[in-house]
Image (cartoon, rainbow, N blue to C red):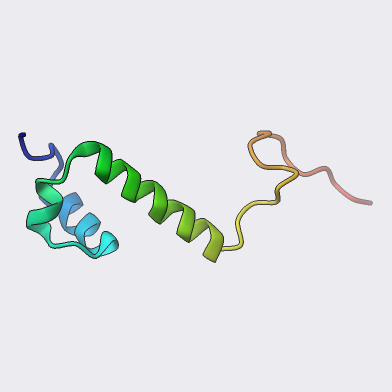
Length: 66
């Protein structure tokens, strides 16, 4: 298996965010890395409060209330 094709700066940021050693990150299978990134994004979304469930993914702005 070949190492991930990412820049050194990106690798350092990901290793820090995912709390894994840089060497482990570089040899991590891509599907595992994607799974960890999805978990990290979900965690950050819940910490930030997340979008309103009624408006999620609609692509429409909230209507003005008068």
